Amino acid sequence: DIPALKAHFAAHFKIGMAADPGGYKNAVANPVILKHANSITAENCFKPASLAVSPGVYNWATADELAAFAAANGMVVRGHTLCWHQQTPDWFFTGTAAEVRARLETYVHDVVTHFKGKVACWDVVNECTSDDASSAYRNSRWLQILGPDYIEHALRAARSADPDAKLFINDYGTEDPAKFARLMTIVAGLQAKGVPLDGVGHQLHVSTTSPTPANVDNALRSVAGKGLVNHVTELDVSLYNDPGSCFASRTGCAADITGDATLLAAALKAQALQYRALFNVFKQHASLQSVTTWGIADNSTWLSGFPIARGNRPLLFDATGAPKPAARAITDAGDLP
Ligand code: G3I
Image 1 (spheres, rainbow, N blue to C red):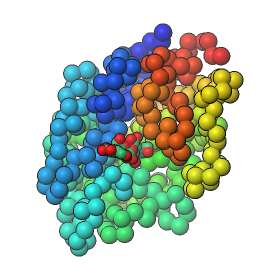
Image 2 (image 1 turned 180 degrees about the vertical axis):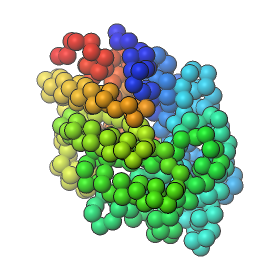
Image 3 (image 1 turned 30 degrees about the horizontal axis):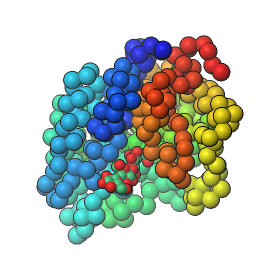
Image 4 (image 1 turned 45 degrees about the vertical axis):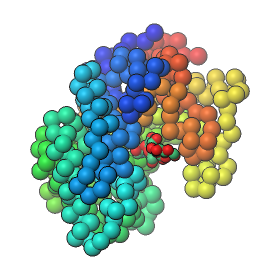
């Protein structure tokens, strides 16, 4: 077996895992998260689609259950997420711009106040960066209705509701230098206006061949250079190295390899090397305070349905909860296949 990850990396960063109560109570996953994690992110139950029933009406039950589980088991909670273009009820976006802004601010205020003292940090704004060079900002409904200031409104509302919670902008693709530059344009604008912001969340949904560790290294250093902290928020390493067309149009996606023992073994080895390279970079950065995998064990992962339905094993623990080559690689167990 391997040492508890939270102890192994205690001098560097917290170890987090993402799950909803149904995920962490699963018999495979439960011992894994209890042994290894000192941080937890709700995979879905802290999102507006889960919490917001109708304006001013909330369903706290599942999120409260997760917060209580975290408190009882020595885990901090990363709150994910307050303002996103997905998993948000359509009624958020109805009415005048002034009404939409007020609804956003009220929602952020109510949720952050509810979890005051129970949530250490919030992914206040999720995935606000454009995927192409047309703009720094994702062309989301938030942007279309409120313009770029929606980010500022959300951050200010969060800070005023809980001055002790650390506030993050969280995005995928920060390992891509061009997209990361757009994110940092947004960050620089916020800082120039004195908008409260404590850190950048790097999702790091990656593959065995991309990104290069150097790109991650550069992104972490740039964020620290702005006086912000770094969190790795959604790490997983897909077995597949798909072309861009797979994500854009679901064409040309790599075929399922989980039924082929030879291909699978090679992919799991490549995955272990990628995890090790990434953690070697992570350990170099004092500004990196938290590393969360997007899931607990391979029995449950969003990547079995994205970009296409296909077997995938992107996490550190296998479908029985046993440590994979990747878990041994990052703890220097020294027996890489
Ligand atoms: O809860 C409903 C259920 O009532 C319904 O019967 C079922 C039928 O499809 O859907 C259930 O909702 C699903 C939800 O997960 C909870 O399981 C949604 O369809 C499904 O789309 C949703 O997927 C989540 C996804 O975010 C939504 O965009 C994934 O679990 C979750 O892992 C994923 O997480 C995101 C991060 O928040 C942000 N970064 C990317 C990451 C991966 O996409």
